[in-house]
Every structure is written in structure tokens, then in C-alpha cells.
Image: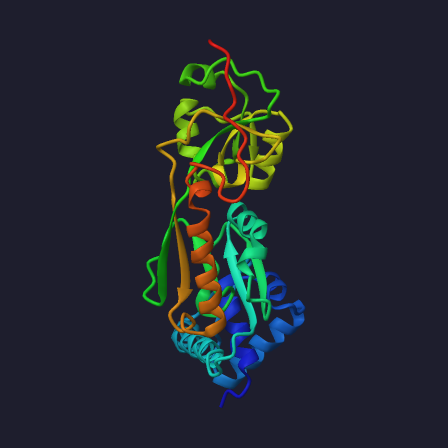
Length: 310
């Protein structure tokens, strides 16, 4: 009989990671503990669960057979955890929101309005490129540009956001046409983050050449543009109204990604989660002009940068 979930948790982590060091880091334990727990589990089930290769652990046939049952146990435990959160209807507690860096900055700038009449709720904002696992409560809510194909996720479209080219006020711009822009020093994302909005447009503009300044974070791109190091494609809601930036031309028609609010179906009726969802939806409605690059919302927008004739 297997009485210790920790042994199964170690087994599941090792099956996914393949290395003791990775499991130890992920679970916050040391290598000997992981090895001992796995050995203990093998003794309990009476079978060898892993083949020890020089560089990793690989499941045996017995391990493969056990894996499905342990995954089902993990999902059941996660479901109990999610459902238990909704057993009371008080609008208080913590709501964890995951979004990309730029969108997290937008939420942060609007925390006062988001938390209006919700001071009994604690907000946790998590900036990340990667999708949080809503089933494991890595986040309660996510704002993303793409919707994962998961039956357990409920989605709400928040709208579209505009992107445009931005430069420092003192930047010398010889023209706003494609040929003039091609000659400018560009700030973009590295190859690992080439999926970021606007990067396909920039790649086409530069005819496949890489921008000379490359980053992996919207805030770094923003700071580099503000410093005058080059020009960049930025979301209008992040750059409009920034006194250290000017827009070069109108929003890019080719770059207008949708924004979606995602929640696990077991949590959508939880009062504190529902309250924060409603607050985010209201915020996107109130700031629609800013998000779509048509105005300033509740903040001022600096005029478009004037360019010299080429």
C-alpha cells in the first residue's frame, strides 16, 4: 500500500524532468532525498520504475504503467484544491494574475482603479512569457494573446491592442516610409522571443536581417528606446503618454493582437475571482481608446513625432 503522496510526487517529477538535480530544484529538496524516495517507492511497488542512464532517468515498462495512475491522482488533488476554494462565498483572499511583461505593467499602472472597492482582495501580479497552469493554481487568471486549446479553460475576449513605432524625442528621423525606417537602428527581440507582437512586421521590414539591438523583455525594449539607442515597435498603451517617447506614424495595421482573459472553469464563479474578472473587464472598457492607440484614456498622450522629409 502506498501511503505517502510525497513518494509519488517525486516519481512524477522525475518522470517529467529526467534528472535528480532538476527534481531537487523544482521541489526544494536535495538529491539524496529524491533518490531515496524513488528507491522507497520502487520497494513498495516491487518493481524497478526507472532505468538509470548516464545523463538521465528513463521510465521502465512498470514505470510507464504507474505514470497514468499517478497523473490521475495529481489531477484529482488539484481539482479538490480548486473546488475547495469555492466552498465559501466571501469576497476576500488572494487572486493571482499572470500576464506578459507589458500587460503586467499596464495592470500595475491601473491598480488603484482595479482595486476600487476590492481592498479586501490581495492582488498578486506575475509577469511571464509562458502560460501558467490554471489547473494547478499557478494562477487564478491569465491575460494572453492566444487561447490554449483546453476544455477546462473559460475565456473572455477583452479586445485588441495597437502597436506602433516609437523613438526618443531627440531621435533624428529622416522619414516615416519603409525605406527610411529600414535605415534606422532597431531594437527588437532575440530569436527565442521572435513570436512577440510586431516582430514579424519588423522581420519583414528588415528583409530577414536581425535588429542590431535584441532583448527578451518588453521593459528592456522600452528602456532602450527611451534612451535613444534606437527605435522599436511597442504597444501603444505602454508607450503613449511617456514623455521620453514619441510615436513615429500611426498604429501598425498588421499588428493588433487580441487580448483574452482566461480562468479555470472551477474558479470562474468564486466570488473574489469573479470580482477581479469584472474589474479587469471594466478597465479594458474604460481604457479602450488608449489600448487601441486612438487616444489617452485617463492619461495624456504626447503628439506623434514629426519627421523630416526624406
